[in-house]
Structure formats: C-alpha cells, structure tokens
Amino acid sequence: MRETEFDVLVIGGGVVGAGAALDAVSRGLTVALVEARDWAAGTSSRSSRLIHGGLRYLQQLDFRLVREALKERGLLLTRLAPHLVQPVPFMFPLRHRVAERLYVGAGLALYDVLGGARTMPRHRHMSRRKALAVAPGLRPESLVGAVQYFDAKVDDARFTMMLARTAAQYGAAVMTRARVTDLVRDGARVSGARVRDLDSGEEIHVRARQVVNATGVWTDETRQMAGADGRPTVQASKGVHILVRRDRIRLDTGLIMPTEKSVLFVIPWGRHWIIGTTDTAWRLDKAHPAASGADIDYLLDHVNSVLATPLAREDVEGVYAGLRPLPARDAANTATLSREHAVARPAPGLVTVAGGKYTTYRVMAKDAIDMAVRELGGAVPASVTDRLPVLGAVGFETMWNGRRHLAQRYGLDLAKVERLLRRYGSLAEELLELVAGDPVLGECVPGTRDCLKAEVVYAVSHEGARHLEDVLARRTRIATEEKDRGLAAAPEVAALMASVLGWDADDVWRETEHHRLHVQAQLAAERQQDDQAADSARLDVPDRSALSR
Image (cartoon, rainbow, N blue to C red; front, side):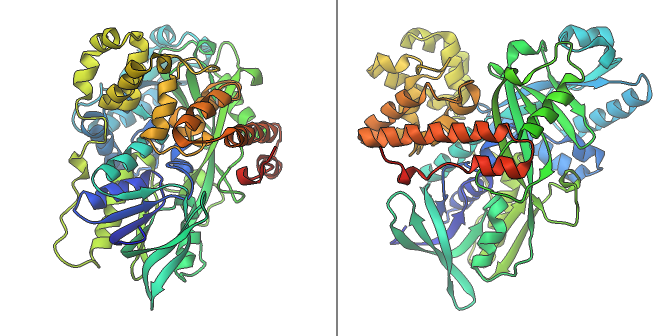
C-alpha cells in the first residue's frame, strides 16, 4: 500500500466496503481496502442476519426498495452465496379473522410477485389448528390463524469477511487494524489517506485516485476529514437481539409479529432462536453499542405475549447490539426512517455511500463505484458482481450432495461436515485437510458444543483474524452462542491462535484477560435500565495494550 497509487481506496470493512472493493477490483481497477478493526466489526456483524425484502417497507409503500431487495435475495440464494444464505419459513400470526387476513395475504401476494423468479415457495394461509401444529409453543388465544411465507438468513460477519477474501483473491490489497487518521488532499481534491496500523503503530500514506467512504455510522466523521460541512447525514439507530435455546420455544418455523414500533422476529439459528429487534436512536459510543436491561425486557415482553411458556432472563444465552446507519432526518422515531441508501461526492476525489440495508449491499457498492469511475476517465467496465460468486460458492452444491462421502473420508460426523459446508462452502475441504493432517483439530474446542479446533486455526491462517475477539465474536460466534460468552473456550482458542501468530505466554494472557473484562462489562451493561448507564458500564474495559500481569 505504501508503494502503489491505487485507482480506488475503500475505507470501511463492513459489508458495503467489502462489496465496493470487490466491485471495483472485478472491473479491472487497482484497489485497496482498509478497516480500522476487523471485517464486519461494526454494524455488519450485528444485524438480524436476514436477507429479506422487508415487509415493513412494503407496509410503507416503498415498493422499489422491496423489489430491489428481493432481487438481491434471489441472486444470493441461487448464484452468489448459496452456501451462506439459506431459506427460512416465517409465520405471521393473525389476531383478526377477516380484515387482517385479507390485508396480510394481499401484502404477501405482492411480496411473492416482487420476488420474481420462484426461488422461494409462495405464501400460504393457515387455520389456527394448522398454525398451532407448526407452532405448538404459541398460546392458542394469541391467534385466530396465520400466514406463512419464506425469506432467507445469513451469517452476516462471515459473509462480509468472505467478500473481503474474494476481493483479495482478485487482487485487492486488504488490511484490518488499519485506521484512517486523515484524508490527504492535493489542493481541493482528496488524493488518499493516512493509515495507521493499530498493532504496530506504523503510519503510511496510501495514495488513490478515488477514495470511497463506506464507514457506516462513522460516515460523517470521515467526511469531515475532507473538510466537508458538519451537517449530519447519518443517524444511528440501535438494534438489540437476544439468543435463547431452541428447546425453549416449540416452533417448527420462524415467527414475525408487528409491534408498536416496527416488527419482532424469532429466527431459527442453529441451536438457538434469535429474537429481535429494537429500534431506538443512539447517540453514545459507536464502536461498542450497549444492550441495556430495558432492551432485553422489551424483547422478552413482546415475545412472551404469544408464548404458552414465557421466557425468563435466565433463558437468555446471548445478547448483541448493533447500529443501523440511517439517513439523518428530523424524525424522533428512527423506525420511520427509510433504509434507502445515498451516494454523494462531498469533495473531488471522495465518494460517500451511506444508509441502505444489508440485503442490498451489492447495489450500494455498485452505485458507489459507478460514481467513483466517472472521475477516473477511460473506459471502465460496468459492474459484474451480479454474476460473481463469493468464495466457497463454486462447487458447493456438488460437495453438499456428496457430504456423506466427505464425512466417511475424513472420519467426522455428518452433522459436523454439514455445518462446515454451510459456513465455508466448497472451501470446507481446506479445513478437512487440516483435520486429516492433525486429527486433534477435528475435536471441538472445550467450552463449545460444535466449534472445531480447525476452525480457529483456519480463522487465523486464511480468514485474517488477528485477535481473540475476531475469532470469538465473528469467525465462530462463540461469544454470543455459548452462555458463558466464550469464557471457558477463550484460553484454548488463544492457545490455538498463538501457534499460528507466534504469540508468547504474555500475549495469550493479555488476549484472554481482555476478553474476560469485555464480558464482565457487557454483563454489567445488561443489568442497567437506561442507555447512558449501559454505555458507561460497557466502556469500562482497559485497552488490550494497557493490560499487564
């Protein structure tokens, strides 16, 4: 990065930034991508993990956004990432016999039509008896019938990381733990950025003909480095999710329910249900948004309104909070703000992309690079990402069909092989070869129920993980899917990482101690009943570099 002038420098390693880097490099441009923390460390690892058109936007009559999102859903399911994006059924309980069924049924019929090609089953109406047959965990008096439809789910952090890996495969220079400290200008024109490696402290000047600001909720801070006005263009909205064990809610389908603010989802997720989300304005720390006790109670109260066996606080095994980067407007209620994205040029040489939703990341990335190439000159090809599979997609279906043979060949349970295929696609064979070379890596990490030791080694050797948090929170999800938030697993995970990264005993201790303090602060925040107190508790963690025995 020090020695090259790039056509495009992308700032921000979330789904839009990684998507923009892939879009640009696949057009034949030279590309650099820098991320201040880890791939998807912000919003893109803390979403509802849905790939969907958005029924709430249909209700708001935003047909263009819904059509666009459903088109992207189809591409992801069938062409771009079938290994990472999976269909999931959702049931919409009805409380009124005629008018509501007609209204919801008409909306879902339009949803099916806007979805285009039949990549999903069409919606179907259900009587109360049929609805309770697939959702016996609901109180019979909470519904008079239901409508079932399909959307899709994705591991948002892994998908984002795979986008960055795909961009790197095609020639992009990509780097995490690389914070932009300032934008460099040649007169009025932005001509690059000063970038500091947060681990080594080294700072370099990265030169670029075009800079793309894809920093999400940090959009305005990055704009202001270029001398743009201080008028806010992005407003952060906090969304909180909780995880409970699958056996605590007797459902054979996902669930969606309207609330007074937006909608509530109950999403099947491995051994858990994900329940979310909240939608409240957030003006505190952006790097570590805190989930408060009030947020958790809100979710429990709403889901318990329909459950035959209510959930309690002790049923909550995981909690995470993320920030949506919404276009700033004069609205007290962020639930009313649109998810449409905006692309702008606040200064020559600088393109900013903000807003939008996870499902439409590819369109946002394309629009940002379309604007960037207008100043590059010459004949730059159009975007090809609508037909460019993400790493792991090519060959996935063949490997999935032969998964029993893979299980026999490598001596693993079929369930473990299926899990690897759904997480790594055709790249799963790289992990299976690690296990073949060292059978110990085929064992589960102590303190986890299904994470193989090979996944930790692979996260460092192939997926760019540089710190314990990268593995626990994003590559494996141990930090949210184990009830102890990964405390039992942390020492073994750190030891496995040390074997690849060359850490010594002090490094291992520092990483595990930082995680312990991180979990302690998170649990303290969840005991608070307002955002301010939760934010203060959540930030009470010393920097990793300041820790010493």
